[in-house]
Length: 546
Image (cartoon, rainbow, N blue to C red; front, top):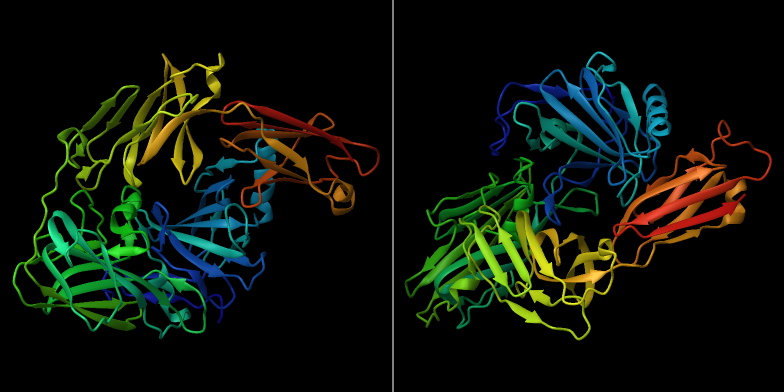
């Protein structure tokens, strides 16, 4: 494959709703054969995977190329995505390259100068359009494994400038990536609607085997979901499924097409999925454009006749490789117990919701929930605890946006109120969600309805030198950092009293400084000092010599 061969896509050739407009051309982002370790829209925790992950032959340092004529529009270094680069193209698109190992020299020096001038590892530079023009196929960076990354690869997002939507880049490179394997399913789930439906005599969710021969008995309103993944020729990775279509008795009831989403739609993944299942019905507060229901009931099925209902799932990838799975739901009249719940603990998805209990206030703005929610609320008083523990709901419910939770202090055990924080309780452990103390309450923003309390963090982070004897020989100074209760808020390193450019590797919890002979003499003894602060202001200072 030649790096200057052009990939041509005539929009409108695929079934998605995002591809529309004139023909657009791009060259590949790498000058090696293109293979994927991740595809667009894969279901991740609280978000969709926003682009393509290209394999880089298990190494870092492959040339990363501009896709078309344009200019460098933003240069970043972050702890989460590592070295990042925005390239704006004259054809109305922008790419974001993430997890790079570095930039080409004319950008790398500017980044380093910024880091030392501002004494920070993290960088955000917005050049003018005239500063760094690029041509199609021109190298702009090196592939890497920086930030929160699980191995060497190139992550590339593609943004449509006119809308700000993230769009699937695969159509632009379909001629460079071969695939003849169809998606596969490993499970189907039935969702009897609370107070409105029942499956085999119960209102609990029911998992079944794909292509099951035995009919499932149900009555009333039910939804379905499917656990499925896509696969590509000659590769062991699994991917998200491009298209899912559900038909009942030959009529389409639901369709998902994973081809684009906006920033506001990103967290709606929480409404679409249940665990690792994709629901084939749409919650009333979910406006994700990827999803479409055709039966006027948001994809829910009314089993109201004593007969067999024939369900068929069709799974398709972008290349048109297709698989189908069938099952039968047999309508059998069964008793459906009504939903009984105290009005106080029934939250409506389309209204502002308040919950006030002794020592706790919760405010959930309109548009935060995706569906009506009957809470299973409970309060626990632990002996000697700082505050009561409030079970807002018995299972975690993700929210579309943050809401405000305030919990009162039962025993003011510390005069220093900066040490208090709101903690989410899960699996016997506590996880900090932050918060500030005022007038007897600690208030924090939460993104999940679950179980919460107030805790205290007075323990400073651990800062431990790693293989100190090898620092001089390896040319790298490394510390392992960790905070037991809250999280690392900031850090700073110096050598001989002068700022040193330590980077934080979040995957390994290490601070690393590559010794720069222009700034640190190769001879003599040097003193390194690293200061690490957690979210509650506890500080640890480590001093060593090399």
